[in-house]
Length: 211
Image (cartoon, rainbow, N blue to C red; front, side, top):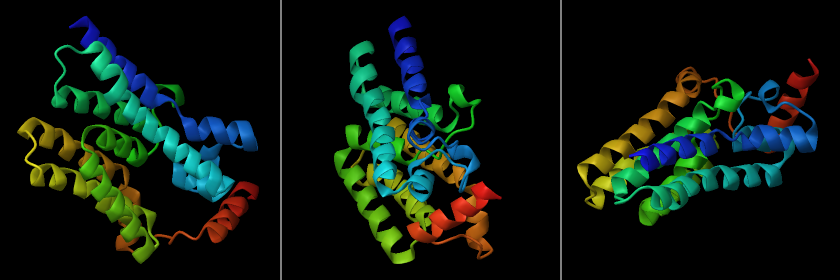
């Protein structure tokens, strides 16, 4: 039981590592929380620091999810079940969304969730990524793409006949992502959500930083 608690704590703490904040602060000497959307995730990092750094943040955030389900869970939890793997992943996402290192003000959890799903349900992850790519290029809204990709997770679990507990955790992951996109949903409903064009977004971020 103690080793299981250690796995849960380790998953939360690794999820709490604010990769976007750390890298932008280190490379650009800018607090990512004060520029652009104020989010520490890959999308805002891309807006203010370029696509290369944004991709790196996405990959590192996804690795946090992979580490929880491929590292801590099998190393510390015996016997290991898919449900316990997903639970470790869920705690990594909660760490990313509510990081102890940034006073519980974190990101939206999309990349970390992709890492979890890739580590536990590769075909569902592939479907979710495909939906994200299609949603983004059709609408140019990162939020729409992310919300659509999140919905695919529990649907993919249902389609592949996963256990009810796993589907419940997958649904919770999707709901957490929806919850973290509340402001985006409100802007979408009122026609105020910005489509993603990196050059325009960088200019908006620079204006906000200078104002």
